[in-house]
Image (tube, rainbow, N blue to C red):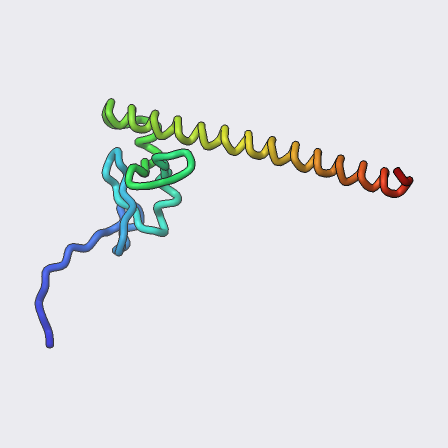
Length: 118
């Protein structure tokens, strides 16, 4: 059986290829295919430890110059989340380094104590 149907098709604004799914810049609305989106879009999460329906993507041009004051405010909020994630990672990495140092100290001291008798 054959049917004639009308079908809307999305095309990448960069390479021009047809895309089943496009990533869209919140600022300007440009759409990118899977292969091009990493090169042109930056993803922002809506939470420090999670993502969700508030996540968004901005192209490089809109990050440098947001088109509206509301988008500038949204981008600033996303950048705060990103800064907090960076801070969290730095604190965690420092904590892990101090843990390993303390564990190594215990291991070394334990071996010294047990080898020479208490």
